[in-house]
Image 1 (cartoon, rainbow, N blue to C red):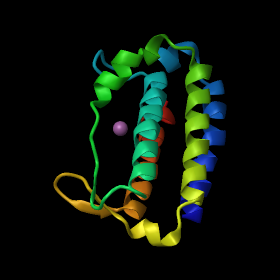
Image 2: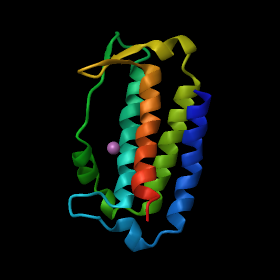
Image 3: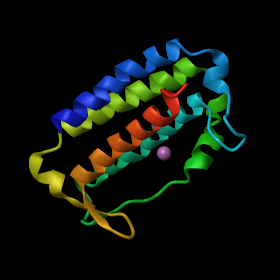
Image 4: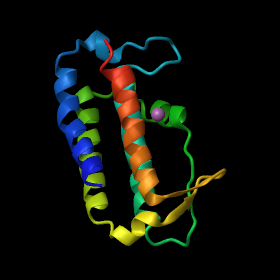
Length: 148
Ligand code: NI
């Protein structure tokens, strides 16, 4: 867990710096009409944080296996209209949510890391879910935000 916390903390600090070097066009342009702009990807990462924060808390006290609810990722980005939101507000939200997630992870008792959740077609541990949260974040950052 220590490594995961370090990685999340790393992105909390790095992402605003990365965006500092991007132009407004680079931040807001959709590569294709149906593809997210970079600022919308940060919005999507906030949505992932919101939904996973909920999971990381509930799996610790609900009946096992805790049933994971999916969410419609495209609708979340559209409904919240990240494209028209100032970038610094989205980045602030990203930082605040992930600081809270770090706080949650730091407080998970070791024995709860093996608690089981039900993803519909498979069962995974809370530890797996947390690793998957980071992997998903890094996938978007490395492939869509850091790419020029
Ligand atoms: Ni995603």
